[in-house]
Amino acid sequence: MSKLIDEIRFTQELIKIPSITPRDLGAMNVVTKHLKKLGFKCKLMSFQKKGTEKIINLYARYGNKSPNLCFAGHTDVVPAGDLTAWSIDPFKAKIKKGYLFGRGVSDMKGGIGCFISAVSHFLNQNKKFDGSISFLITGDEEGIAVNGTKRVVEYLKKKKEKIDFCIVGEPSNRSKLGQMIKNGRRGSITTYLTVKGKQGHIAYPSEALNPATPIIKILDELKSRSLDKGNKNFQPSNLEITKIHIDNEVDNVIPAKASATFNIRYNNLHTFNSLKKRILTTIKKIEKKFKCKTEVKFISTGVSFLTNPNQTVKKIQRIIQKETRQKTKLSTSGGTSDARFIKDIAPCIEFGLVGNTMHQVDERSSIKDMKKLKSIYLKIIKSFFDKS
Ligand SMILES: [Zn+2]
Image 1 (cartoon, rainbow, N blue to C red):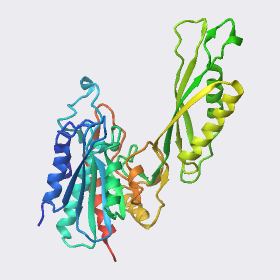
Image 2: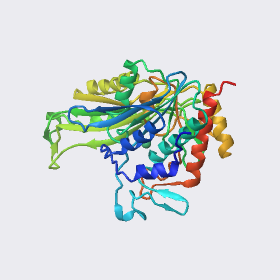
Image 3: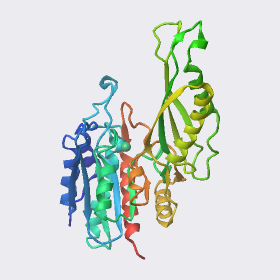
């Protein structure tokens, strides 16, 4: 009989390590230690890009047969913020009134705890099963995310490691366990725009070229034209202006330069390149009209993707519905997650705890939810390897 892991105690052990992104402080060791005891082969990978912190990542696998069911998550957490505002120390992992308190409990140390516990129960009953279980755990999800899952996925691709299905343990439910499975995400593109004109006296505008006017025109045109109406899997794409900046020390000078930043969250009707083209067309048109000069830089922080609701997804949906008595929705709403990288090598969904206190003061998860999530994960694992 192999060792059983308790989801609450495991999560408490992890919360007590203040692994505020990008620091690990031993968090990955906790996961590795337990997985090794269960018989997993663990490969730790450190990545560092020039000018960034060194990040520890883990890929662990039990078995070498297929299919390979993977669980993905992160051990890093966001800072606790104002410590005096917390009713319980964010790194003491105390239980109060049926809730486990702590930074990262819902996002997403608790998710890791529930899955590892479910795996320990599964292995206890099924030493020999036809398939493999793997873990892809990173310490770089809440930060810049350049040395985390992205790099591990590159490594797995090179090694031709096959993952047949992946569950990302992010808190996918807004207020009740079982509300939502995420089966895709919108993409995100940020544009940095600078418009250059010619400085001059405000009383002689014909001698100058004010960049404020064209930048307002550009932003107005981009914002007021609808990108699409959405479709059955996605909400409409949306542009938001996040910064507008004109540096001017006095009020009687036409400025030489104006800049703005805007972000588009887009659905699967667009790509990074199609949006770039669309934005540039508008900018160039107005640039020509006003005879100004522009500088544009684009950054993609994730492309949109959709995991088709296939048999496996529907089976998981049914398990969750039965266990939680919720109408479990498939959704592509919300921000980005590491699923944006994993989708390149495996179909993936996100399902974890309730996220209504994530990144907040007094982040907490109900003990009841954690126990339920553990048993949902166990049922998913069983059904994934069940051939009958
Ligand atoms: Zn997270």
